[in-house]
Image (spheres, rainbow, N blue to C red):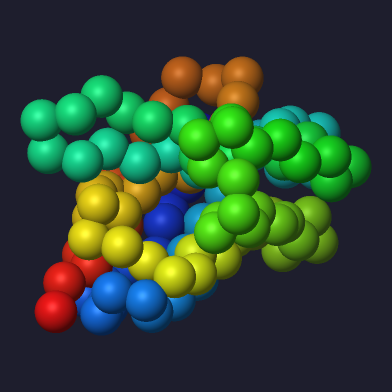
Length: 113
């Protein structure tokens, strides 16, 4: 049974940083591309980054610069380092197995002064 559990969200001041974590289970983690998405209220879910099992990373053009995805296959974890956060980054953040249609509960990030 696939499980994805995100953590690390919270309330942060503009310009601050957060590191999101996601622990995965129920599939051979190192064999799958993992991705981070976010969804703000009233907006569509948005792809932030993806990383293959062997570490090849892709960022959409709209996301290059402030977010960094990484993974630890030994721990079945994927991370998202977010720097210089802005109020418009406020959203629910999700990790996902690229090939499996399953979403965890997400972790809320709120950027506000």
